[in-house]
Length: 313
Image (tube, rainbow, N blue to C red):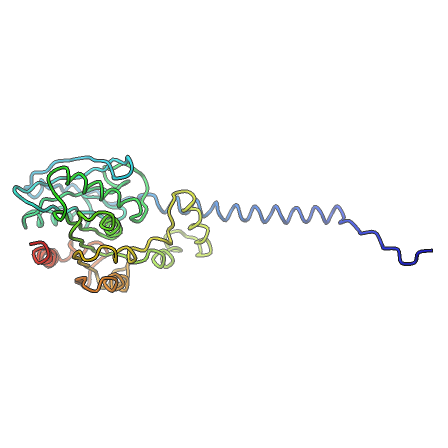
């Protein structure tokens, strides 16, 4: 008699097998729900938000202008713009608004007045609506990743209308600063870069404001980043204009920042300035994000025109 015969392996009971499958399915549903929430959240936060509707046009300030349209460089998105010619001007400035704004209502409706200041100083002006904003095509924003194509399309349009390399400058506000930095990296025809309320790194801004803007805990951020890459082809965590700014040297750069900016902390402006040691920086106190010109029109205009004269004459 074999006393050492091995005992048969016991198979899991039907109840245990069902429990295992329930656990597996539950885990899969949790993972699916996690990424579905991330996809919904990123789809929602990249939609163009509502913003005030102002009636100002260049004509409000006695300027003749044309409404023009052109394609963004690299895709077929149609961009709307106001072209404000200046007789015999050899240099042109492209003005680029920020997120949830447009050429008409940036700086709470006073961006057109700033354009009139620059026109009076001797420059031709092209004010554009970034994709998804104002009268341009599109329905989402990408924090400058694709909007740079809109600025490059504006450069192409000006080049076709007589403005050559070195005769084009850019002025960006908030998200518009990432757009103009990215465009300047790709296009040497952009000679002058002016940044108002610029951010150096998007990730800490999202992390800080995520719960307030989305209503979700930061636990969902990895899923949001993953789904943004899958759905829209770019990574939120990779938007770091500070890395790109180093590539525009030796072109002149002016940074204008509000010291108590409630959206983009002052330290981000310093990070940008440190990326290019020769960068000129000017700060204003007691002002609101992306509305410095509205609050300090005369001082702001003086800073910008002085910078242009000293670096573009």
